[in-house]
Image (tube, rainbow, N blue to C red; front, side, top):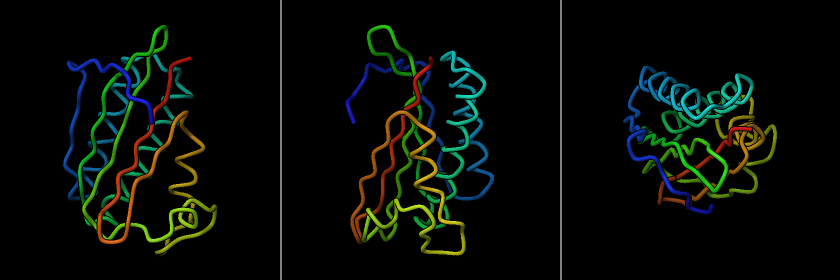
Length: 140
């Protein structure tokens, strides 16, 4: 994913160790989405993606860190969000991004659903090396 200039004053970081922390991360993303001027629909899409990714970080990665910041690109403003963990990693990324596939008891829509809800999506993972998922949603 391309790097964009960040508004450092808006930077948020939440350690994810419990479901309450997932809620905190989701709330932080919502505040940034509002500050960045995302429409209510796009705020909801980004917050939903963040909620799914935060839940995955907790359940499959054993916890980790959520980071979010407002970014700018020429005439656009958006919200960049990253979830990182040091868990077991994802052995088959292509399979993990397939609708309906789940390694647990979920519906198999977390990663693929999150990808559909945002404008930019990047997943970096390897077995034994943890996972980082980065998303970006632009204001329209």
